[in-house]
Amino acid sequence: MSTSLFDISGRVALVTGSSRGIGRAIAEGLLDAGAVVVLNGLDPQRLLDTHRELVGRYGAERVHARAFDVTDGASTAEAVDWVEREMGPLDILVNNAGIQHRVPLLELEQADWERVVSTNLTSAFLVGREAARHMIARGRGKIVNIASVQADLARPTIAPYTASKGGIRNLTRAMTAEWAQHGLQINAIAPGYIHTEMTQKLVDDPQFNEWILGRTPAHRWGTTADIVGPLLWLASDAAGFVNGQVVFVDGGMTVVV
Ligand code: NDP
Image (cartoon, rainbow, N blue to C red):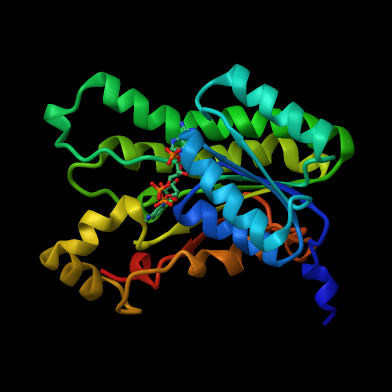
């Protein structure tokens, strides 16, 4: 089998929320595979630091950065236009930016519900729509939405997160229903529990840590590196007939009770 099926060198990729965590690992994986990568985050200083570090490793030609709020339609449209103008046709979009907010449903404020849903779900619609406008005109493009095991499973205190990730699952299908015919592949990756800043408090909680190890057949937390291989596959020509799927990368958590 030819490995050229997996060759994404020179392709232009935008990864939202890539100043740290899973998004950053995905950006580094794409850079290792030879892609040109545009980083994004909300905090300009954190983004600048990550940008500087990655430019040091991969060169200024291949690493770019733009701070914008993925929940803001106008900024999102400007950012995608900027990528197309400055870096060339956008081949790969990874909708990764996301937040968590833990509080019981009865105590949940509407503003917090809306903040989580707009950051985790509306953002994928906004950035995805802008990217697809360009991709459809060219008849090709890859969109990978980052979901979660919470696309399928609920847990107390994280209702807006669970609702937003279930939404990502079906948004991935809705995008497929309308855009696959134009040569786009839109899929999702659903990570299990991954050790990042978002989950640091859980890692530090001995009881929760024990529960995770017992609940995960692979008996460990995931690492950001675990997400990279499946992402590179979905972003490459090797996944040319994979449409609307959610790939669980969770050490087996969702297949056992
Ligand atoms: P982190 O909190 O480590 O990183 C989140 C990233 O998203 C940061 O770069 C942050 O930028 C950016 N971001 C947040 N809000 C916005 C916004 N409005 N506009 C632009 N960028 C924004 O999270 P993780 O790496 O842990 O999670 C990344 C994705 O993976 C999320 O979608 C999450 O739901 C999902 N996921 C994570 C799991 C885990 O166990 N960690 C498990 C399953 C899914 P800044 O720092 O500037 O705010």
